[in-house]
Image (tube, rainbow, N blue to C red; front, top):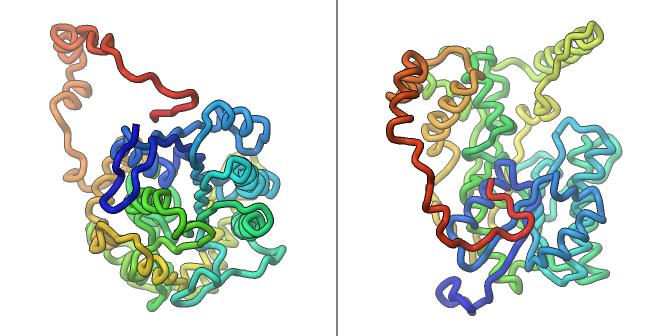
Length: 398
């Protein structure tokens, strides 16, 4: 069976892909896209870490033998504050294990990397990278080493790879509260007292919703995109101070106040927090600071990525006007409701938390709600008896 995938593109047989790290913001967004838009042409399997550990070569080989994928996408990463061994085994060895499998099968390997491996500066291109110094953070070091090894594998063994470097990612369904969403959460929770940056500091942002369209595009056009690295970021960088103040305005809160503390003042504050956390942990009180604190210095350093190479390619942005600033109202609405329901935010404007009848009944009249459900909402789902295609092994629909 062959299906026309897009105008002007050659017909291709149905394909099966595997995505590692499908539970995070990026991986989850990619999984949802392929499940929604390509159910008849591309089946994307998303095994969780219990089904497949990329740190275990036997696991990888057995799973790939069973599934026989046509491509692999790697969006996996260890927590930012993971120790050296876990970071090395997950971010580096795991990524290279997947590349070795793809190389043997001669299938495309799409690797998601990070702007964390780039220096500070403006309009950075794909060839700009930090030197591999020992004092780099574990996360930076592992991502940088992976990119270097993938290029060596291309030269020596003909690996068909594409590296996609992301800026500061934003989007829905980030259940871990990290990156940009940590900033949003901090302001919404009224935990940021002052504007922790200085004016004129710009960063590049990545719209998670756009990324799957690019991945689908490059999978269909390997001749153009193989053996290449791309910065997948919004065209225009955004000033951090403007972003913080815009979030504050939408939330209608007073904090952070319009005071821009010097970098040294913030460094002292960070050091004090770390010492206090160590003392409390020593006393038996478990305290953990957000891992994003390791990137606190970046709040005072501009880093913008050039997207010229991406824009000069055959890929066309379907949502060119969608940016971090234009998406703020939608993101704020989504996350305030989510964090409120999870009791992560104690106080906020009640207009964001809309109650429906079932919620009111559940809170105040549970017996009435139970009687209502028993009367008309417990009929068996007989429609599940209809024949449907079975899932492939390892397919995680969640």
